[in-house]
Image 1 (cartoon, helix red, strand yellow):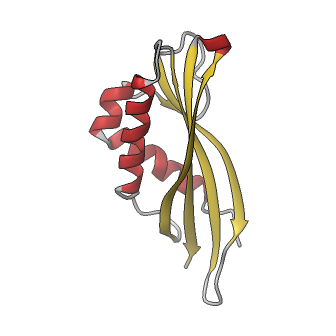
Image 2: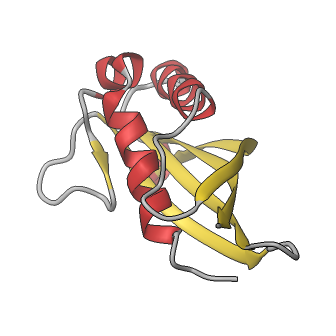
Length: 136
């Protein structure tokens, strides 16, 4: 097992989201590694938590990366956030760019959680994905 492909995987996710026309249209390109400083846009996406476990095989090292993306919206309802979340799922499941080291053996949607945050003033959808990477 190695954690060496964690940063390249994150970069590939970021690149796929930035390059997708539907995601760009719905988010205005507001995709960040953390909550943006200063005034935040009405809708933005952050790259979230990651949990990595060893998942190699006899021929190659590998790891299972469970990672989270968060869609946050200040709209009164969930519609806008759900549209962005759906576009994110479509963009990622269509495939990620190749990694500079190793390869992505699989990428799956695991779950989503929609909730009100900030005392009900905002909406958040947490998307959880699983990627299997092989260090070949």
